Image 1 (cartoon, rainbow, N blue to C red):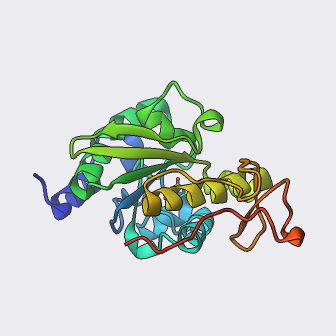
Image 2 (cartoon, helix red, strand yellow):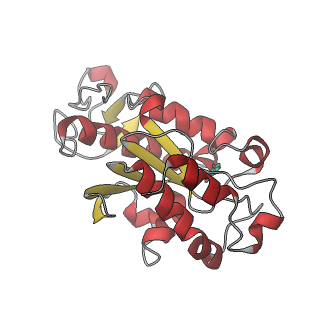
Length: 226
Ligand code: URA
């Protein structure tokens, strides 16, 4: 099997599509862990700094990851397309970059792959829409055992849309719960409903049972996942 350094070199030297000619450099994976987060493609800041998810949307994503308890040291970051396209990548570009994505995942061998946004979802399931798939687990054997593919809204969309931001927090919260308990969350402790709302402080409440009543908090111990 290729080493991490070899895979990094593969990505940095990639010429499979024309994007390499217009970006500063391809951006390979950064860090690793039980969770690997797959984004769309590097943005302007990532293109400049050579690291995934370090711009504005990346900062929101890393904040969510930290606050739900996964912890930044347990997470790897990469993109479905490694070169900054300065626009949404085309399906052909996603397809051309697929060997890079596969090689990076294979060398890191995570247990959870979080697909961030429609483009990352398209790399695995071009037939599915994110509005339907976010927060729904898929099991896949990618070659090193069964893993969970977990889809969330892109943080760039969450920065523009409050409902999507709430869904992003909720979906990461549920993922953390699964990492700790190996089951999906039980939802509200009063009604068992699934109408969650994020209160802005990283606490998730049931919409029917308000925080004022001291009820409706999710039955979920958030632990740091080791
Ligand atoms: N958006 C992405 O999808 N990936 C990045 O690395 C940065 C922004």
